[in-house]
Length: 295
Image 1 (spheres, rainbow, N blue to C red):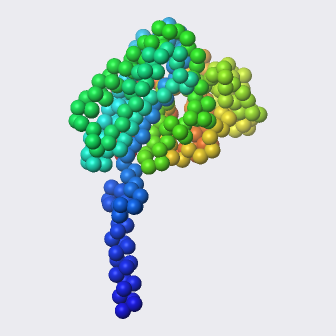
Image 2 (cartoon, rainbow, N blue to C red):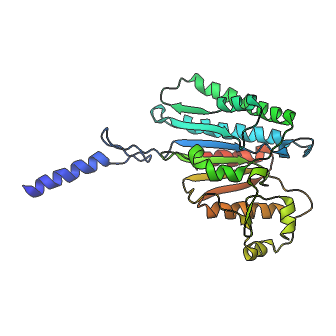
Image 3 (cartoon, helix red, strand yellow):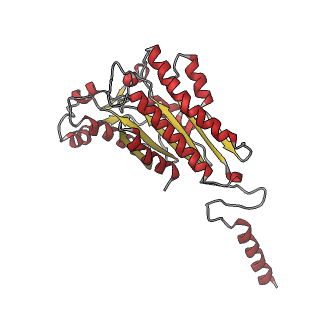
């Protein structure tokens, strides 16, 4: 009789905690529900002079225009993901960040509008609302920044040090951070070195470190060059860098920039990352959509 009672208890426990095929663990009302199919998408925009069409012109397609198209593709992938789920499982969000925040209050207002979240109670028209916001507001942000002309740089290092955990990582979601930048990292308030590592990367530093030949990887490894580690454990964050755009004159500059970023991500235990050059949006959109879908 004792064995029978024990067997019934085991069967009951297994039935209570049985997982669904979509990765959701279900149980009684006190159980923790985990749905890895919920996503938290963040976009960190570098509003330095890289976006200025006068300083960095591109006759094919200006860099700020490429950025806005990248953002549209990210939003498209985000909405596609949500539409692929059952309404009852909606628990997804997307937002845009800058670091530091622009002085123009209009830009900060636009940013608030671009923070969107979906749950099972959102009406169907909310999709159109989000689509409209992401079709208009990003361009307004870039135009305002260019018109203002006060390009203070982008403190990406400080963002990873003090903000990425709070802003971009939710424990119950798949966290994806897109960074729109040319790959150089510099801000006057966060410029320092620890040994041979630095919190910044400029074309001047690349030249000073003699990273201008095909032997640059060996030089980086031997001298210990790279970014100072800004965070200890970001294994719950996926990062996609879009827009790497090296200055002309050094044929190895782009590869050096990517090496710095890749080594930095590995040191911060980021397992999934991509680093893409400033290509036309039509070429990068399939990559963006595939990344968000997780397929």
